[in-house]
Image (cartoon, one colour):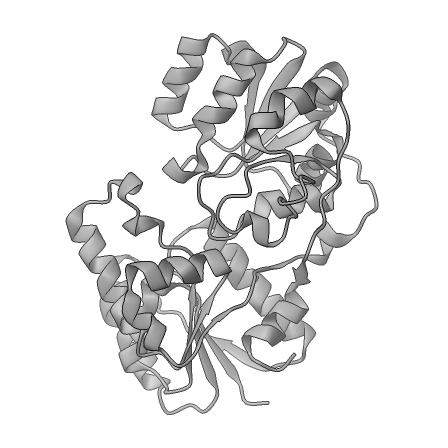
Length: 328
């Protein structure tokens, strides 16, 4: 097969870095030659001057050219005609995001350039629907497809893991743990989880993997539940899997998700997910049959202690990559 050229995000986003790493691992697993096209340096010059110049140099190279984020679709006019852009979410354009007008215009500029790509890959049907809603002209694009994110084989393996983190072990031995995992962006709706904690008996304790924003930290103080929350960051995958395998449930009350890795990870580890299935979550968790506990049933579930498993549809990176390249 021709070489695949990957144009990564230059930022430090965990999800973009994970997507990039997964794509690379999928190419390696399928013995597909690839090259990472990335400018040296950083900052606005690297992003908007060096990157387009470097992309233009690669234009003559035969193969598939993959931009891993819609925010870099401004590179499309400079690149090979066999271009693929991956679109993750359109939260920037949601009214609830209160995105400054200038940033919305810049983002729409990226999306308009993405229209020139030979193929647009959305990571979920939810993202595709948002794309068609916010930029209707994509309904006329000849090749807008959905390829769900892959996940590492580590999460699919069912074996239980042990943690060497004594603080985590002691926490799980002494408390009934609910998990909150991920960023604290507006669409994560983490204030719902905090209000739920205030309504639950003292035996429940929230383990927050990641930081809370300033507004939610203020809410924690107002609710008087700071002593019932433990905050940790930068856990290894092994420790995170340990948390999923031993927690009572993952609280995942998002009002929108481009994909929703934590919900998928938790379910694969046998951890119940409390969610309305908003956004893409219902695409791989069977919310309609109530195998995911919905938000308005959370108190009832947690008091009953009944464990319910969700049906899961999952792609490991090897297969996700082949779907992306139309070879699988």
